Every structure is written in C-alpha cells, then in structure tokens.
Image (cartoon, rainbow, N blue to C red; front, top):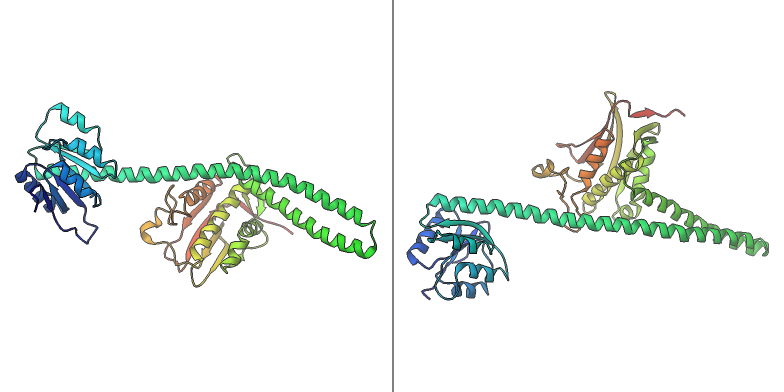
Length: 386
C-alpha cells in the first residue's frame, strides 16, 4: 500500500460519526487514530500529505469530521487543502498543529474551522474539540432550517399579496359578469315566452355561479387581512365551523373523508371572527392531512359545556401524535409534515391567535384518536335565544 495512504473499511453502521485524519507524522497519526477510536468515532482513512487526501475525496464522500495538520509536506499545507476541498463539499474541520505562533492560526481562519488544538494534546482536548464542533453543527443545522422556513414564509407572504390582487381583479370582472346576466334577463322579455324561459333559466344559473364567486372572493379577501386589530363579535359557533369545512369541500370529497359536527345550534362565541375562522381552518387542514391516507377517515367537531366553560374538540380518526414530538407541536418552525406541506407556522399561529382571544388550546394525549381541545372561559360564549 502507498506509504502516504491508509484507508480503513467504512462501517456499515452509519450512526457512528466518521473521521478522516491528515497528519504527516506517522507516529502522531497512529496516536491520533487510537484516541479517535477510543472516543467512539470511526476512522475512515489516514493520509500523510495533501495530494493523497485530494485524490481520495474525488471518489469518496466527506466524513463528519476532518482532522488536519496545518503544516503538511509538498506544495499544499493543511489550510490550502481545506480551502480546495470546500469547493466540492463541507464537513467540520479540526486543525492540529505543533506551531503555536499567531500566523498559522490566522491563516486557518480563512477556511471552515471548527476547532484548533496544539500538539501535544491530551485525549480530553480532542474530546472537547469534537463536542464543540458538534454543538456548532447542531446550531448551523437549526439556522439552516430556520432560514428555509423564513424563506418559505416570505414566499407565502408574496403569495398572499398576489392572491389579494387576484381576488380583487376576479371580483371586479365578476361584477361585470353579474351585470351582463341581469341585462340578458331583461332582454329575454322581448323574446317568445318559451325562448325567454330558456334564456332566463340559463342566465339565472350563471348569475348564481357569479354570486357564489362574489361570496368566495369576499371570504378569501377577509382571510388575507392582518387580524391584530380585528374587533370581537358574537358569532354562532356552528356557523363558523361549517364555513371552515366549506373551504375543504373538494379535499374531503377527493379523499372520501366524512365529517361530523356535534355543536348546539344555540351557542354563540365572542371572538375575532376572521382570526377564529383561520384557526379552525388550520386545525381542519391538519386533520385532513393526518387522515387522508388512513383506512378509516373521519373528522368530528364536538362542543360541550363543562364546569361553566365551553369546550370545543376537533377529533380525527388518526392514531394521535407520537410522545417524542407532542411537546413541540406548538413551537414555531416545528412541523411533523413533509417538506412540501409543512411550514412550522400553523399550530404556532393557532395558539398565539387563540391566546389573543383568551381561548386556550391543548393537544389531548392518551386518547384513542387525535384530539385538540379549545377552552372558552366563562362569559366568552352565550346561549342564543330563538
């Protein structure tokens, strides 16, 4: 085997964090390899110069960690090697050096440095270098995910602005269409009774469709507004829940999901109407996503007055949320959905919006099916008199 290269078999058990060592002193390289292995890491390869390492990474993946001597023989030192490698990939770099002067450390800052330790070092020094690097990697991962979510949210804001303009334009054109149908009905009176009846029937259908478009644009326009200063109103609870379900008519039909509303007709709640509607829409959307691939598909919304408080439960046929993530579901940027569907803002928005309306929300564990429970304080609801 080439004296400048020592490659060990890659472990098939990928949960073990991998390390590649680049150190020109063979005895030191062997000592580092033993220490790294004793700390529980897998040494994938050991190199004694930069050229051998470069050649290796042309056909191999980067490890979790790269241990690099700053001073290497040949025309390329450790810092230049890392800079070259960073063009095609990245990993946590820990520099090791016997030269403790300022210049090597300053030059290493140009590259992707995670830790810097001087020779000779103890096992604990290397252990902490790995641990500090892992902490940085964790934070970098969190920052990356947060940036992706912020970018996604920015796109959603742009989409909201576009949707607002689109709704406005649709409503304007629809006003012209409604007026045209009205004129057609007037002109139909000049035709024979039979022809006029046909024209009137067809135009009436078109007018009803246009009226429905007006209702939808009004509804979607209200959903696109900012709700910070929205006024509180008393609204029938069953009516607002029914309106939320109307948004998902096509999804419910497509996935054959049954819905059940068990809410008393006489109950009214004092809420910010659009904000509260958005919360119900969000919970209902999550429920649809959770059950659409289940064998049994249903969503049930139930009201109950208990101990002077109004309780509203949103229950779906899903098996519930796993215990290891249940405590995080209301955290901003956390989502259990896949990357194409989850933003991590839904339940966080719901909790904050309901809190502003003095309505509590909690996920009920130890239930047969997925259950979210909303609690209205006494005085925030009333019984509607006929």
